[in-house]
Image (cartoon, rainbow, N blue to C red; front, side, top):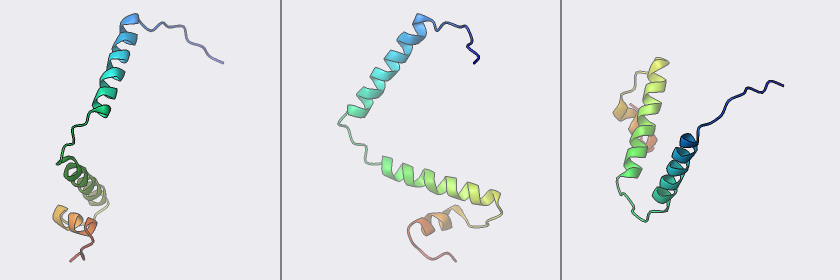
Length: 74
């Protein structure tokens, strides 16, 4: 089995520890942002629209959003 010889600098370990601490602080914060769910829905709609557009689907972004809400596509 191949075992490359390299060393991770101590600075990289410290930076990773800092990132982990900040990430946990963000997750533990009690602040609720009311517009995040709408951003998530919009991102999902745009991803679906872009993906299907590549495949030749001619639906508009608004039509894709409507489908996600359970509306009939025209």
